[in-house]
Length: 291
Image (cartoon, rainbow, N blue to C red; front, side, top):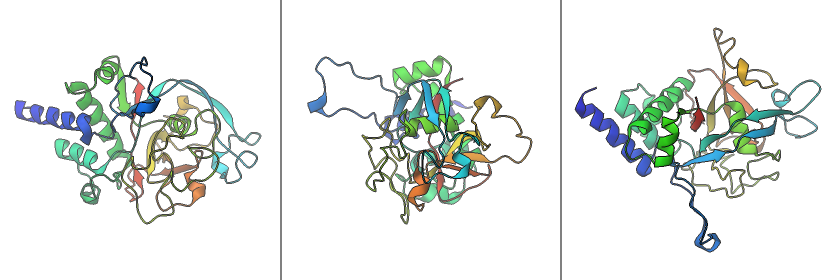
């Protein structure tokens, strides 16, 4: 890489961390009236939110969720199962058109042209699973190289963490929390917390959700989000996620999209698509995990 190209990559990473931000929203703060004068500020992770490690209940079925599909059921004898997920971090919002366009421009990635020309604040769509993986690898390297990366995030990257797509279990835990909620904000449908049954998506992060399990925006509706898990029947087991990939794998996507009915935006709903699929309702949310 020439010095000119290296400077260009660093400049892009600086802009992304500063606000244009490669799927990393500005850090959410507590309203002044609720702040404690002695409380320490949380470490700046550039828009990543910590999802604590530990067990959670995954899956759903007729006895636990009336709207559940067959592929959400854990087994023939149980609707749900317990999965242990180590601590990880998930972006507060989806990747925007502007952020994905910065990646395509910096790398020369051959993206679907329509993915780059939509309004910049909208979540990027028309991205294949392979596009999403390439984006996360570039983002991880860019943040590791940039002097503008928040210190705590930079330290995690030096310690061996990396930006990638979340697994299916990580995504569901972040959306569902540990109390088996039907929607990210609770068990009752709320139209002010998600974009669904609509003609198009809303800007990424525009619908704040303080009631959501981890304060993440758009975990229901707006656009489906790729995961790094291949589609397989439950029970979920991350250790076998790489088996059978010599066949034509489908990759799990989660969250539902802007045009979908309420049944498809529940925390346990599972979707899947072939890795080359570029659809106007599939997008990206990035995670930070330990290698």
